[in-house]
Image (cartoon, rainbow, N blue to C red; front, side, top):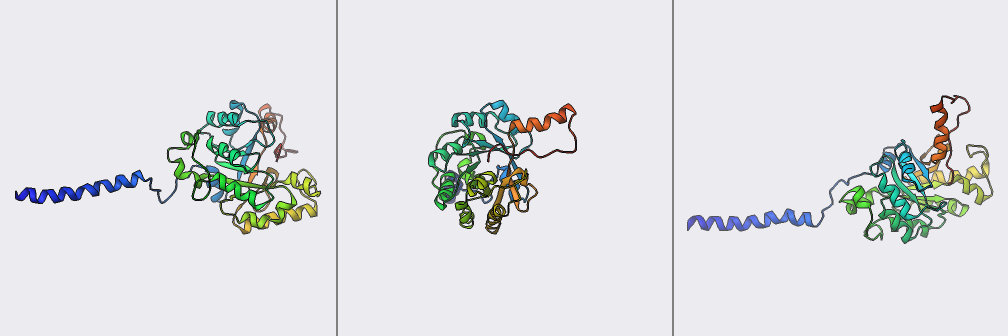
Length: 293
């Protein structure tokens, strides 16, 4: 009787002690330090430069060749190409585990475009022609889960590629890139860069010259003082807001630029073939630029 009198309270005390960890696990308690698998984003945080290769064709083998060739990320082009989301999903899935992090330039900052791009496994959303704060805010809103954004949960390959904790870790790994391509965007570059959730402000060098009427001169897209004034305003606003600054690969030596759109497969092959053939010369070699921007 005496033994039962002591054992029963001890047993009852053990029950809630055992169930507390289980309840915490069921609630999906977020770890103090999020798991980071977006190596391109991590590289930017370390103060290093990141280069994305442009991909415009749907062949998985070609995509994998680019994704495993040494680039930090792939710039899957869905604004200036006929790529479909089914094709993009097949490309990313076929080369899961590649070094290059998949990013997609969506046609616009809409819920449908961004939702499909994120669900198929892209860890970067690149939005073109951003010249209003509403558009920049929409890019963040549809790329991020609550409480930051309004991305809804759905199917796709995202969890199969990035892990069962994807829902808890996606916001920390997703990158949002907004492209400034006209003077209207330049005018609000400071406000755009200050939006929480925007990671990169990209100075779209070619279209900025086209829309402003101040085209850059030379292969390095520099030289026009009026054009340079626009680039300087984007540069200063972005760095002041502690965001990353993007531009064409030819600007790799420009101060403050750390995120670059690189060339496509054709340019990479054309640049590398002379080395393979033994016909390359040290003189006259120029870094290939992006086909579209």
